[in-house]
Amino acid sequence: MTDFFKSWIAERGISEVECLVPDMNGVLRGKVWPAQKFVKSAYDGSLRMPQSIFNVTVTGEYADVDVSEEDAAYRDPDVSLHPDPESICVAPGFKTPTAFVFADTTDRDGKPTEIAPRRVLQRILDLYDKEGWAVAVAPELEFYLTQTNVDPDLPLQPPTGRSGRAETAPQPYGLEAVNEYEDIIEDIYDHSEIASLHLDTMIHESGTAQLEINFNHGAPIHLCDQVMVFKRIVRQVALSHGVYATFMAKPMEFQPGSAMHQHISLHDKTSGKNLFSDGRKGHITDLFKHFVGGLQTYLPEITPLYAPNVNSFRRMRPNHSAPINLQWGLDNRTCGLRVPIADGASTRIENRLPGSDANPYLAIAAALVCGYIGIRDKLEPMPLIRSNAYLKPRTLPKTLQDSLDRFALCAPVIELLGAEFVKTFLGIKAAELDAFEGVISSWERDHLLLKV
Image (cartoon, rainbow, N blue to C red; front, side, top):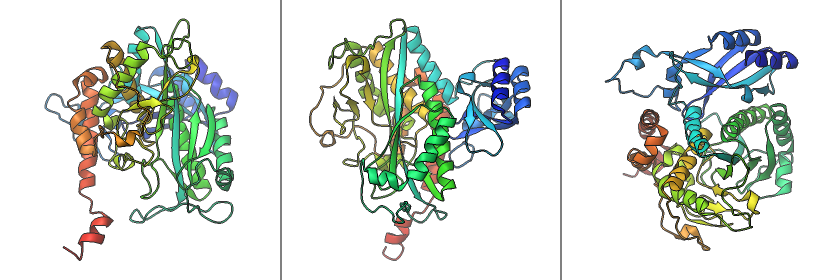
């Protein structure tokens, strides 16, 4: 591995390497090394970071940890970083030639850090691997461009485009609307090509200055790495053009939310056959039905993994282009689970629940663990619907608190994800919720200050 990094870095004239470790919220933590020191440290195992990075809240605080059984929280031991050679890429936009590489972590005994999001996803993928199955995913990621906003009390506004005017109305799939931000989009594509991202198409979504990028399908961890790099690229490109890019689930009150839809398929590792189809267009297998049955049974119980923030639940409202239940239907975008029209080899399920604010590793792990339980336990799905799923009863929780309470009781999923991970994740989310509830909002000042 060290020889690979050494030659890869030399061939591209890389001077610095950013070693990336995604935390629980999908925020990138890490260190920057001079390239030669990175190679040497990767060889001798001296790449390290504090384990506490996996206990950081989105506000930058450390969540309270139960230390009744051990004093690890006080000692905050280091974890060793093990760079993944398949993830290394050129980092675009840096004056100094720089590379990104994602790293997995282990403790002093060489055991994987079981609470690390990348490790959590890998553990679920190992379950599929033991069955001889390979998982392919293709994320669709939505985001907004906005005017710069340095006062968090002020609402976000769409930016001006090339015409000098800001959008004032929805422009779904509008080509002229996309052209308004052509300079930004071209830079995003150029930077993404430098970073070897496997992007497909970009469209204008329903919101004002809302865009969506589709990724080509591939292996889950690789695609999650690409989502993380893409987010970083988009934010930096937007700033260079004097605007913001945000992946908040619901950044503007009267605009649709932003999703991270997941297209998921399952294949035989030996033959490559799609296990969701019997080979004929529109004919799905019992295994596919059981996978869907698992999603319908357990995804409502583990919502925080794909709707991790208070803001996430502002997106999940009827008629706001976001599902409120786990109905499934053929080519039906009101459903939480959509079966796109496709030939047998491309048969897949589209999970429309995750928001663009979700940690991609955990959001995909959530879908895969539920699908796995469905296959294992032969769970039957609800009947396909051909009507408006928004008119069906809501089965997803309405608040972060409710979702955390339900997740804490979902024993079958906790067993597979790991009790230590779930305990840490719930502790972080509880700390964030507590911080949010201590804030007095502008709505309260507007409607209660002089009236009650």
